[in-house]
Image (cartoon, rainbow over all chains, first blue to last red):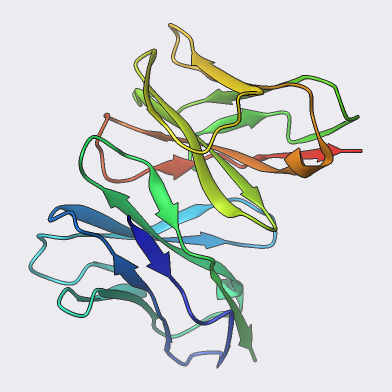
Length: 115
Length: 113
């Protein structure tokens, strides 16, 4: 069965510093996708970044990058130059192959950015 | 703004009642997904529709049902509501049946009293 594990319930980072949010996954499918979503206190889910299992390079989107280590089954999110507006819950998710497009989510990490 | 709309934003109802949550996907998206976010279960996939047909089913209770209409909007029907159904219900959409990005709506917060 597919599973996403986020072991950090909460993280603190100072403004302008970089922070890494951990995500490990488990799947037997050779083809899968990994996602990160941000959920601010207002509740909406904001898509941040995607990494495909066959992608050769780590995904990047602005200040977000995904540190994809396939052999270790990890897909950590790196946020560079943190901003106060980055304070939110962050969810790692996986989409498996085999005719299922559902996303399986981790339990999330609450990031707090302080001045 | 993801382009996915959900109504209503908030819903308060009593146990035993029935409610309908509505979702309009992004323009051009054929797939609609429903997710439930609760404190004890986290974010869980409920059901997916693609171009009007049910494509995948998750941990959806028998008291819950959904459909996708010809104009591609979708409705999630929750009946015989229980206190434990209180949650944030998200709709997401994607272009195809197996497209990478799923864009989420703002959610409907359901409170069952």
